[in-house]
Length: 217
Image (tube, rainbow, N blue to C red; front, side, top):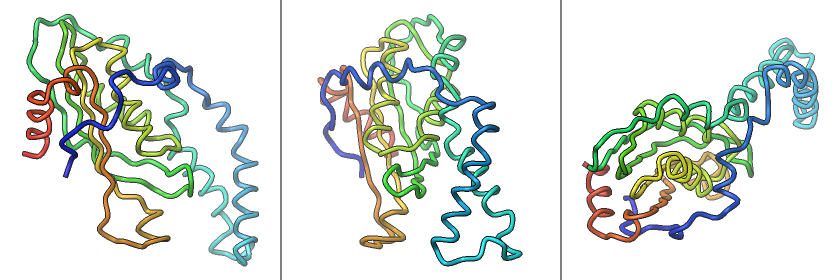
């Protein structure tokens, strides 16, 4: 269950605040140029695992794996500002906006295995709102990078805060980490829950409780 109290400081760290403005770090041209070296790396991995990369079933595996990894991390090719610029609207709305159960698929930066789960986002507008589909786009951009769940949660909240300057933002992520399910402790039903509460979502228990109750319903 989502925590009843926030897990982050009122003001996000400057490093995280600045990160939402970063330019994309990879282009389509970069993908094309790096594909041969990525495929070669996967060939080395197969050899290191004791496999024969020339075996029929593995002949195209390095290229397939390299292409798949580029897709899994396509968030490096996108920029949050591209999503925000044409989707912020002046609106005299002061009630909570919530989008819940946004699917996420990410990659653990420690083991390069999948993380998957759901994101719940709520914010209290301050005369400006964001197109609802753009919240899902923000989640997609940040999740399609090598991640840790704690940072991902904060990045989503900070991007919304910096773009809209709302009265408050709440983000909760519930996710399964394959590095826990397939290796290590191997606990099949374990989930990790992280939250970031900013503004009134942190300062006002009633606002926070309303948000948490609504995403549970």
